[in-house]
Image (cartoon, rainbow over all chains, first blue to last red; front, side, top):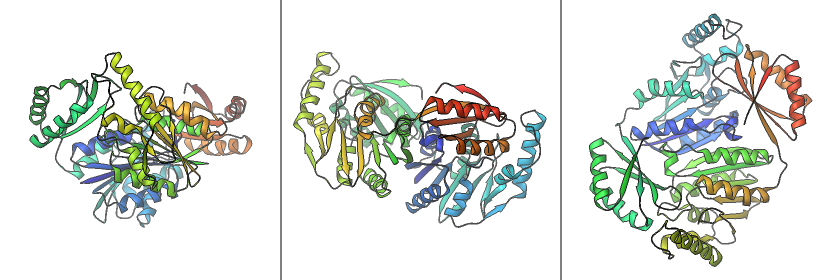
Length: 253
Length: 253
């Protein structure tokens, strides 16, 4: 099952913000058995977002997660752009508007904003693509959206990591199902990188795991990541690798 | 002048590694006056890389930076994939091979590898696309490549951050020229986000700067990034914003 991720934000394209959102989303999708095929980052620009969404849909993933640009400011254009990419009109959701109003009233009561009322900027967040399911934002104002179109499950999430993570866990994961995979990360000590490949190939044949290796600078260490459906499967693979001369040091992920 | 970045690596698509390389490259390009239009991340897979490179070239950027997948292991396929995307054969570079041999002999002498000799895995790194200029790797084995094709300056860099950064600074920046921009990052205290936009628009009219704003959670703070050609221009803009009621706190970038 293929998946794609699109992250949106000028700050990512100027290098002012490192895109940790896409890694978080990729990890969650991978652990559910999805293979993330591509991550695309574009600016807060309607045309750029429309193009990226349509191109991703053209590659027919099972899941497409779009994150960033749902807030109240003028450069938050993602929901409008996604609607346009999907040829769906926007529609005002009364329930979302009520939640947004509640949210700002609470911020006002706590002294975080000067004005408790709904204004155009805040109201904008209550517009979703026609036919979309509103996704609850447990820690912010902007709702997300879930749209099933041409068999692609499309999720539109906020860009602030705290909001994105909460919505991903509470609203996305229950919808995408899939088997839960476990990842474990090791540091392998090896002095000849050419000896590693045949041993890894043999392990892949014997055990129901996926293995990624990546060098950690030159010298004795190579990062090894094992994916399996259970800790037992991973432990078995580790014992096999160690029996074949690869010293593995467990790394906290 | 538009630019694009392609980062390559399975570990980025499984969420095991946060892609800090693209932020570093984006920052460098932005400071030289390039506008990074898109960042694409794909796996260590020839077809995926070929597709991403060709799509990026189709958008006609002035600069395309490709990073990751130049090492000696079997999943390092980037240079081959770039050659294929550009319809150029690979060719063995004797000078690069000599540098690679020197590098491994030194590693051997320092006790980091068991074998000082060139093997197929190591030799692979000496193949570059026909017509490419080899880029020196000041801290690693794999050379990068610079190719000018259809007026696009294409740079292929290693993925290990230490090597990528050294090559970007020593080999890429001198070739792309451009004006040096300065970025300064501030935290703005404001209690009504709707008041900010008109003041920023006025500042953009008056001063030769670019401004990015991004909310930092709900409440009183919004991140403001100013881009200008000199610190004076940025300081003038800051004074203007502060005179209009926006308190700015300087943030170390």
